[in-house]
Length: 608
Image (cartoon, rainbow, N blue to C red; front, side):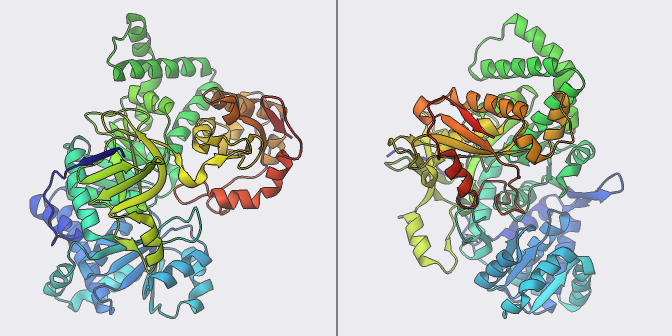
């Protein structure tokens, strides 16, 4: 059994809780800007001391309203400054937040609030309030509903004016490291969400050790980041807490349609994103260049960037010709992309799905080192991550300090350490099934290189076994296909079937530009595009590219383009944009059966 265990850099403190991270930051640098909030066309800084003052004022409001230490308070809101303000106010009040995704359906809201035992909930908007109202009658434990759109946070602050500072200090000191800090429900890609009990030590010890391991990123002078992925997810939640510990200035942009203008004005030094964001940045730039008659230049620049990065990573000499080309393209192409991202981004932390070597090398040559990492809700986000001083594109890096990673006999990744959750809430059977001793069984498959850098090779439950007995990991085919600009999502199918096939959806954002660039009507609907010959040829090209890297038995032999999109709202994607494979295979079972209704002998065929 292959195993890599990295000892912690920072000695553990079993008595520390998350609120200590803010108190320590204020004591060290009270005037340092911890946040910036939108202010007209620009941003207004919020210092560490001012943030703590606001946190304590809101915590007093929770105390005055009857919230007791240990009480569960649900929170349904977008990614804004108020999210982290509420988070820390609840920590200071001694309460336990139960985050709910802003896009959750009434049934999901009902399950999470009911299962967690939440006695209060904060909602951001009238829409959130309306969804809650649909299931309010099924939540007998729910005593309080506060609406941010109704000014209820300000009302709480006013109500808490009579609470003494000493009471908040008492409350924030109650929790020890082993106590529950938050109850985060899994995104439910494989069934009903389970509540993960994450402790104060999970966040405190992981933050302290990660800050040292990634000090070039988070402890650099002037370090800043713009959060736009949902803070209800453990990935952004951890980065928010890590940023307070490390003194990183954080801004928020909940509307991803406004992401580029926000990046331009905020000018972060590092980003946190999922691979789909990097794919869209690349594809948008390529299609914009194509529309301006510079598509050939962009593709040549991309090829030079990837070649340049690969040579650098392998420690090889850059040929003079490539140096000249690279310098030219840096002026014509790369510099413009850097400016679009704010001009100061040096690092980007990527997680939730494989990024792919092509994009990793492309952004590396732009001067943006993408530190791909790996983790789950159950591991408080990161278990492994590439380091600023040593990264290997195509891997998810080595274990973080304080974390151990091993591979079981069947290749399943198992994790133990400071980041591993305590248990599934009120679900001892699932907890027992998830552990082998103190090793958490992730369900993912991977491999190590000799330096302990982990590569994700698939998900155990998603391995397809064809009728011929061939084991196929869908991700190896899906990830490169999804990188194509017109493809939204792809699901590879073929379990117990004679060959591998795929369901494809188109990207409605990128499709009009691509159609116009290829001499077709940009007004074409998804349904029309799904049966258009030129679109099929482009999808075929993407599939051929993926097939080139696998054996014939593993290659996609048939595909169908669906006239719909898979979205979070449709119930087919999780909030972090992962596909809900079982839901898709159930909802589109007829399309799958149609694929296999006739035999196929050719290499690859698309169904109209």
